[in-house]
Length: 191
Picture (spheres, rainbow, N blue to C red):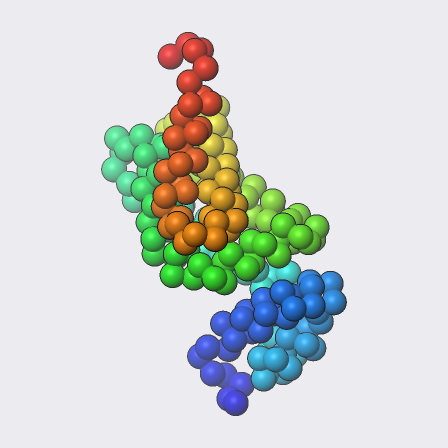
């Protein structure tokens, strides 16, 4: 098999996830992954810094979020911007890769090192959203709150989606979590 085959990254990712499911994250080595994928260790390290990065490298969501916020009309409410982005990601990025993402989410839940990295990715997304909102002139506190709500909404929906064996689309889980958040946030405070 050619070292530079265009699907090498995805083959490595698929091999890693299969092995993590079969053997567990800790018991799987980079050597196991490259053997399963039919590539060299050097090829693995061209694509990933370590085996944790199989789940997290190439995550374009923060970059996409920053670009979407920057390109949106000036009068767009901050939550509406993010909501549109979440719906687009659900349909275009997550749903077509459901089996892979669900397997990855389940592994992340089981492995402390992966959970730690996942939390860092969530913090990175919150920061990108907050910065993007601030650049649009949104008050710092409001920007932080909206960014936090958006990231929590996405995470809660992803967790529900990963645990759902009925095949319900992610967009439906996003809608459900949004509705629950609206109920929780309607606590009778000042408007």
